Amino acid sequence: MARRKRSGEAEAPENHERWLLTYSDMITLLLALFMILYSMSSIDAKKFAKMAEQAGHQMGAVTSDVTAGGGGGGGGTGGSGNAAGAGSGVETNAGNLTNKMDALDEVYSILQSYVEKNHLEDQIGLVNTNTYVKIHLKDKMMFVPDSSRMLPESEPVLKEVSDAISKVYDRVDHITFSGHTADVGPHTLSGDQTSWRLSTERAVTVVTRMIGYGMKQDKISIEGYAHFSPVANNNNEEGRAKNRRVEITILKNPPIIPADISKPAPDAASSSTPQASGQTESSKAAH
Image 1 (spheres, rainbow, N blue to C red):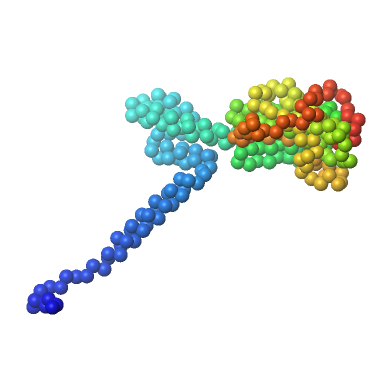
Image 2 (cartoon, one colour; image 1 turned 90 degrees about the vertical axis):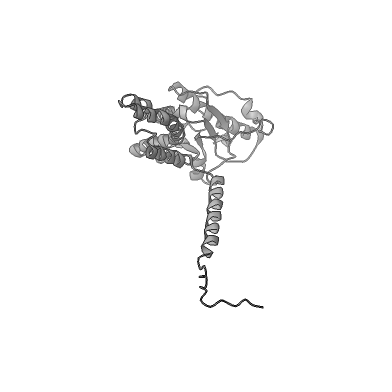
């Protein structure tokens, strides 16, 4: 039997805001989900370094000067010195990330300015990505046809490239020099061997000259691709000219290839020795 309300008894007001509890719980769960997804995503190192530096400035831990310790020592008060000292670790870590990233941008900027100033767009190609900078040294200005002998006019250009790389050499991980030839066919065993040899020897020639200009060599590797990695059509002379090239790839974090799955070098390329300067190839398949 239903309980009758006593006369004069006040009715309890109904709570119309209970939905807020459910709503706030849902928002909290969504926020947690987005934080987990963000933590699982890849973070751009340059943006992270900049964010860390800005956070340090907000907390007063990172000074605007590059040498945080110096700013703290000359500040006069003990508090400012401690703040600079506490922030030095944060600044150093952020600086290391920034230096590693900025090395690619720096060498690209130097060479791009040089190419534009000297109108060398048809002789040097540049590509800049987040992980590497690639320099295309086109055969048009590099070598005597069918040989690994460099043309005299390529010397000053190669020195500029060498100087630019030397400026960032200690801040990059690896530099690869790869030689390429054009495919003029028909394919024969001797013709392909010549192509392998010529592509490798041209890369060796470029490395040797740049080392002579003062570039270090402990992070360098050399590759010869013959005519098997074209960037243009080999059916016309314009395309073949683009395929004859030496590429310099400056890597930030090169992939590690396990020794057990790495491909052995072709016999023709691995067993050959670099040609003496001035020697030319007789086979036209090595164009």
